[in-house]
Image (tube, rainbow, N blue to C red; front, top):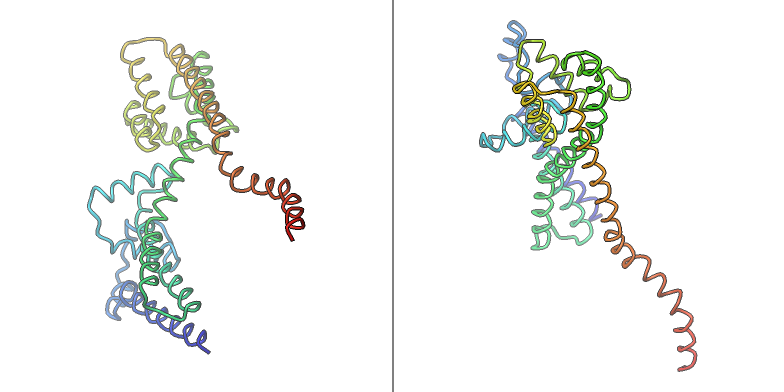
Length: 302
């Protein structure tokens, strides 16, 4: 009976909170709805091209209510762009942070209340605050992992793409045509680096200087080697040096760096294996080796 009462209270509070949030964030007056029917407004730039009524749209509407400092919001925007999202996804990201910060404490409160039959104790309040902080910080940690994964996806094929660009340049193509031809290769068509290069070529076609487009790509991806590649191309164009020779040397350096990173990861494997060995393998070995001896000693001293 107590579990039913607790669940009923939790469901009632959750329903009332959902209704209040709906009327606070999504509801409109009858006059505003009639005016929108007569004078439809263009879709908000903040919510982007998200269809109305979806969860993404609702998260974006919640995120629009958050007032962050310009520096903090710019940091989230740059991280989202580096992870492969659009700039307007920052409002959905902020909405997800607020949603998790509110939902996880409610789940924790319900779980603690059903087991210990108490609502407001010191342990319950501390656990609720802890899960609220975890819910607010979890999307940031997920975004950090997404940025790191995309940076690896960009870095690993970079030497191979530069080799193809070098071959195209030595065959007589310009650097722009070589970049376009490289991105059309089926092997790299869906790679994030190829997508970024396509954006660079489109910006160059629109009239933007090539060096500025490459610098913007380095800022978007947050990959240091892209910035080095941009500097190398700018210096080759400025001083008139051989671009194919510079590309070949740079690709060899990147391939050496990639091999060194693989060797470093392999060297760290032995250290990482210590913890599962101590926690799982060694106790099982001790039980198997010392178990019969413990049984015999127990029979002797009986």
